[in-house]
Length: 241
Image: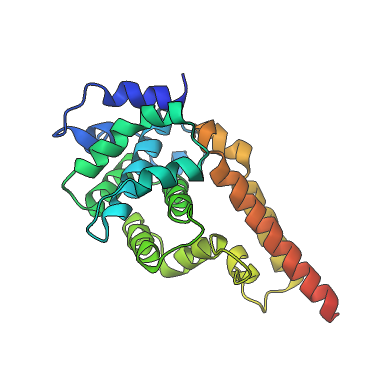
């Protein structure tokens, strides 16, 4: 069953009062953060991940006080979702848009569901970044919204800057910021960080954690950004040597 069919089945009988909390599966027993590092999550995480990303995308669209269909179009474009698949996701978007609570409640529910697993929260935030930049521009209000969500997820300003750099569009991307190192970093540190980022963000690792294959773009784009940044620094240093 595809993630879209699971989404349709999960939302088909839910009323508005049940909404996002029920979809995210709050209260579901999860292992501690220590065990989270030693095993792959089951496919059960695919649904709350998708619902969380959709919900925050809808909240982001509402952040200026106006609700439109933009977030649906952005989601469809960001993840190359077909019209047929989008029909399955439509109710989830509608539930999220009708949810009267702010983004804070959704963020807190995700922290509860993915307790101790910062990687899962990072995947959600990366997904919302993709929705935000689907029109080719990361608008200031979208960046500020993402910054606030990151803080609720427990990420530091430095960690957010690291994520933000990977989603910078055009030639303004700082390769050192993408890799999370200072320009003064030596080659050994640079190579070590590069290898670590590739290993931690490999697309097959994304799928092994139970993430929907439909969203593997989150991992492939991240790896591509890391490789591009490393190559840019290598060329720069070679030219200066």
